[in-house]
Image (cartoon, rainbow, N blue to C red; front, side, top):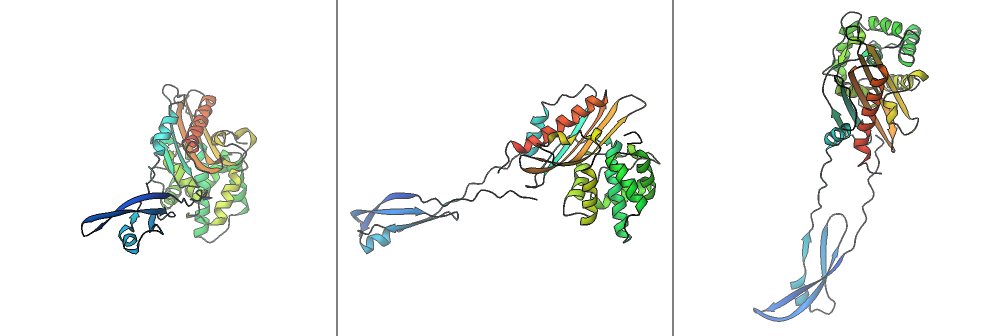
Amino acid sequence: MAPHRARRRVPAPHRRRHLIYAVVASTVLVGGTAVGTVYVKAQAHDRAGLVSSSASPTASPTASASATQEASVESVAQPAVDRDALLTRAMTSVTVEDGAEVSVAVLDLDSGESAGYGDAAFDTASIVKVDILATLLLQAQDADRQLTAQEKTYATAMITNSDNVSASALWDVIGQADGLDAANKRFGLTGTEGGDGALWGLTQTTAADQLTLLQQVFGDDSELGEASRTYIQGLMGEIAADQLWGVSAAADGTEWALKNGWLARSTTGLWDINSIGRVSADGHDYLVATLSGGNTSKAKGISLVEAAAKAAVSAFQDTAEG
């Protein structure tokens, strides 16, 4: 945790009509006796796969009628891409310290395809601040009210500077873990449990759940209204300069919005390092959530989640169309 200061769907290429001509020989039988051969020109039509034929102009009407053919050409289904397998393969190149653990989940907003690696639960550290703000906005919507000026001040400091005092204040406003858990049930999170008492940073979550939360923030099918989603997105796009690490490493430009979390456990001295957000790469928009624990230093944890984020996006870039 920080110190107190802190579907654009890419159209598939248009299928082109292909005209394929073939000469087909057909033997004409009259009374069981072969009397001659006519040649039929078959023309393959468009994407419906229908093949029609017409007799040679020199053929007799009887021969033409006998030789007319129609066949159905079935389209060959393309095999489904196993994104989980591609992500697992990409993760083999990610260096993980002995005793450390990492999990990542990714969604291509353009295609709707997703992939995940690992299903362990981790401490959220400061990434829970996105969840706290989403819960606050959902509660405000239910009460048909706007955030107060003080709540907005807390929200800005909590997200952009990862201010802990502001997070604690809003944690109390939403009703601590009970309020968070109730909102998460509506958001569709199934593996997240709010931290005990004032310990919001020890909320437990999974990468899959964080991906679901990101869909609530960045997707249209959300419990949050458009104004609420736009508000969170805007704050996640204005992170303090010293916190511009994590999933942003997977972006190929400056199109990103994120929230990071970092926490050194007092009992072990090991670090929880997490990062969630939206990035743009190779013309596609991705939601990425990567969580880790057991890192021997903050720097090593940052390197781990950045490598995992890059691996997650690469599982789509290698086979992405357009």
